[in-house]
Amino acid sequence: MKIASFNINGIKARIEALTDWLKEAEPDVVLLQEIKSVDENFPRQHFEDMGYIVETHGQKSFNGVAILSRLPLEDVTRGLAGAQGNGRDGKDDEEARYIEATVMGKTTPLRVCGLYLPNGNPVDLNADGTPVAGSKYDFKLKWFARLEARAKELLALEEPFLMAGDYNLIPQPEDAKRPDAWREDALFRPESRRAFRRLVALGFTDALRVRNSAPETYTFWDYQGGAFDKNDGIRIDHFLLSPQAADHLVTCEIDAYTRAKAKPSDHVPIWVDLDI
Image 1 (cartoon, helix red, strand yellow):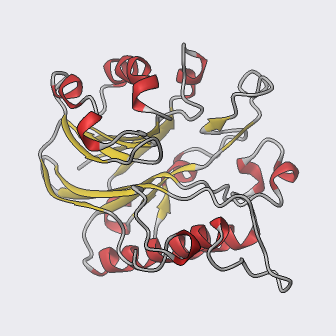
Image 2 (cartoon, helix red, strand yellow; image 1 turned 180 degrees about the vertical axis):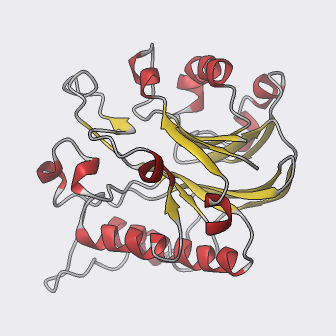
Image 3 (cartoon, rainbow, N blue to C red; image 1 turned 60 degrees about the horizontal axis):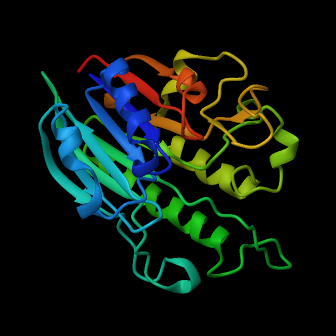
């Protein structure tokens, strides 16, 4: 089963690029982020005509996640638990950043969790170094904690699942061309990285690093300053596999070539092949 994650940075702007990649890569399941569309305006029919089941969790102009699947989907849920009082400025979190479904494989069902974790910038800190309550950085760390809570629930079931998407998180210095430039950024600050390590330490496998230890391997390049030509990138899109899913991992790859095509997203697809 080939499962991909792709932050497309707007379905309206990227529909041709996404369509071309789907035809080339032929994934079974795709987890999309930043569709930037309400559900009723998502071009569902276009992808259904390509043979995909479509499930969306959209939001006008911002955020938004979706699942495209050639395989049957069951038990689709939208939104991450713990939204009450955990949004920005202490409000409820109503941002469309999370979607789950069970994919029916040939032999085993697989739970897929597609996520678009908050960016967290600007970083607003109190004098003691803690995030200012209600700030964007506070929202990011609270969202991480909610994701960790959901991961614990799923791990307790001892069934194969994965959590994949745009984590807006640079795990290690080797995951950035210029790590020093990111030291105070929410994507690389120590609090963010600790939150990611806590999540991984629950028992997850970082699929790319298990199968690919090559240096300068990235999933995002800024549009400015010729970043892609210089390979001035960062790795922020990740596949975390539960122990039961990791047992089936064949490979994990990044389709970096898509960044050089017309009207690209600033992210590129990352995908895993699971023998499941």
